[in-house]
Amino acid sequence: MTGAYDLLLAHVREAHLLASTAALLAWDQETGMPTGAGDVRARQLELLARLQHERSTDPRVGDWLSSCEADAALLADADAAANVRELRRDHTRATRLPAALVAELAATESRAQQAWAGARAASDFAAFRPWLERMVALQQQKADCLRAADQTRWDALADLYEPGMRADDLRRVFTPLRERLVALRQRLAGGRAPDPAFARRRIDESRQEAFVRAVAAAMGFDFTRGRLDRSAHPFCTSTGGDVRLTTRFHRDNVLDALGSTMHETGHGLYEQGLEVRHLGTPLGEPVSLGIHESQSRLWENHVGRSLDFWQWCWPVAQQHLGDACDGHSAAGVFGAANRVQPSLIRVEADEATYDLHVMVRFELEQELLTGDLPLADLPARWNVLYRDYLGVAVPDDRRGCLQDVHWSCGLFGYFPTYTLGNLYAAQFAAAADRALGGLAPLLRRGEFTPLREWLREHVHRHGRRFPPAELVRRASGAALSATAFLGYLERKLGEVYGL
Ligand code: ZN
Image 1 (cartoon, rainbow, N blue to C red):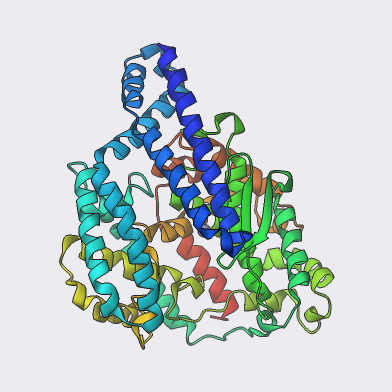
Image 2 (cartoon, helix red, strand yellow):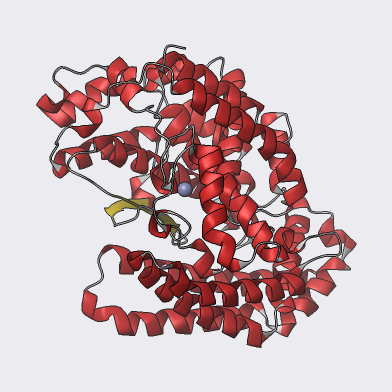
């Protein structure tokens, strides 16, 4: 019966070629496409999306899966068993949604996103409200099609991004985390804030680029299987055989360029660490958004915002950035990279307050999906949570509930994966620290290979072999918890702020 398995794998590998072709076209659209090519590019991507959808809902897939599931000899092979389990999961999800709902979601997402962009620019929530109302109704329908008997609507949607994630489980971790983060924010306000001067030095973009490329190469990003380019919003996309990273440069913020580059390179190392022989099958795919984000946050924060890293990096910075470094030091830059400033905008948030932004959205989107929060009350409720969690007053909806694109694109249940990334990153960093006899001396010498190899061995190479919760338990020795993250953050910021 392995015939069915071979046919199934050949089919999904071709679907992956279509998806990676679309990813490459989307990368080109963000990095180098001439503006006049927009129309034909939209048609190319639309065709590829249709072909991918046809493949994923092909009725033969269900037949092949049933044959595989009845084949005990096949399932005795751990690789085959994992692939069959994950492909069943994908197939169930793809076939539970009626074609009419999929089409309506796609059309509404594109129009709601345009309406959102206009409403945000004008800070006019009322203009976006009917679209959000429509989007919430469609997401409720989608959740009802997808959800298992023991899942809430929110759980069913979140499961698309973080398999197995449930609001109740998250709440048990998030509520005490939020309380400790609010307390930390209040304590830091009474501490000695570090000098941000280095972060604001004016430095040529070409110098910044040479610097961040040197750091990405030192981290072990394989430039023969990937590229680093520029885009308005940094991202990482895998195009099958190679990994495309982007970053951005501001003349007066080299730390933003470095943080963005280390973040995306962390994503890229995960993609490059997947096993090539499994390419195009679940075992060659990243397991979840939370695990993906843990890889970027680990390099961006646990490495790039540590004093040990800066002791290695400072001479590298001096070499590339020249006299912009005069009058500064590794210890000073370490402080500048760890300034905490509660703010209105999630994407500009520091390490201590970022998760509080996520908590606001976690609360609100559940209330929206259950219908407990009338749409008209969303801005006011948003502002109350910002006051309570972050201690800031929201002056208008542009800097309030209209700031993120996610809900207009139909991404409900997505935000918590950012916080999961932070928590997993801390658990992995602590486990690697124990296994490698201390990360600090390695970082001080710029020896990043042992850390990268530890991540490859314990996280990357598994692809979707284990569900995220099990992967975390195996790699870190513990279930999801905020303990490692809070310990790390309170220790580091206590040192920076002299508490
Ligand atoms: Zn990321």
